[in-house]
Image (cartoon, rainbow, N blue to C red; front, side, top):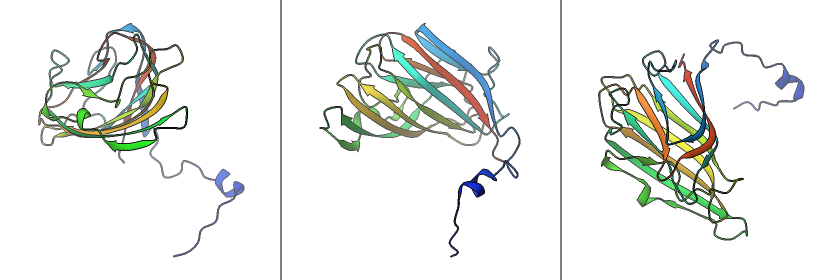
Length: 207
């Protein structure tokens, strides 16, 4: 195997040649302001969530809850948001570390997974802090939601300020167990409103 060396000159010479122009496209941005839910529904308010893109990426930027010790969560719909109750099977694990330097751990999160459940999927592994400087940021990937052949895979990774003055990092992955097209995604807290924060939806071409 050849050893490849890089320096500042070679890195600065790298261009987008070979990359698909517009491979990642911002579809919709929403700013929360005391909202019970943030919904992305295909065909509503300029949202695209169909066969236009095989991959969709949601970005969460400083999502701040109205109340303390609440979970950030999501659900899927196959009827344009009339019902958010897609059957899901998921897996989750959490990592924690306190401001005091204690409590560092990583473990499977039994209470955060679903086994053919239609309820919400927690994206944080514990309660999110509600103080003015506390929030959650991260992303959710949704693959081929318009497929009428395959289940709907998704992967999430978020970091948040745990209300006990700890950083929490939660990974969630699973699938919506439906061969119907998923055409809406909803985000919320398990109690209280989403006080503030920015949600962005991108479409990604795979070639």
